[in-house]
Length: 200
View 1 (cartoon, rainbow, N blue to C red):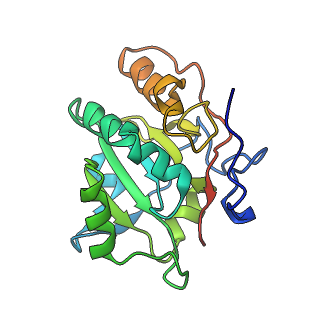
View 2 (cartoon, rainbow, N blue to C red):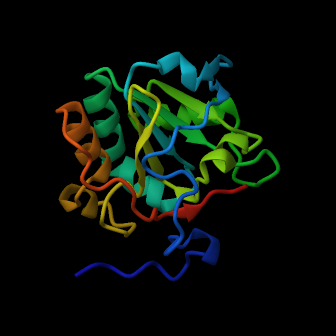
């Protein structure tokens, strides 16, 4: 039986239901240039010819903490990074929002979680988040070497904040990468994301 959401969660932190991502499977991934936590400009075009995962995040979100606290997200980052997938973690929290993290704060939090993305990017103007139609944290996108989105949506099918659920969930990101890198068509290309609202 799934646990209900904790009563202290505000409405802005409830998962988004019935709202599709603006960018869906089958379309070209919008290009972007975002600064990482070390101050380096990172472009999507830098990874042309590789599979890319975009992960929207926010350390204040209990859904994000579920996937980091359980070790699920760091494990995925390490698993696919070892297979030459460019995993980019993006925080689109606007600088004007109380949950905005400075580069140092974001870097420290990622290190404390044992995270291993190729880069952690601060989309402090929220431009890239809006370009992708990122709705929630987490919100996941998988891009193929040709620059086409082959998966967009939720990380998995267990829409809760319970860390234990990450171990038994059907992970859509892993499934999409496994199929695509085996030369197969992606069975599930678009799902509805769940998590906290992106703080635009």
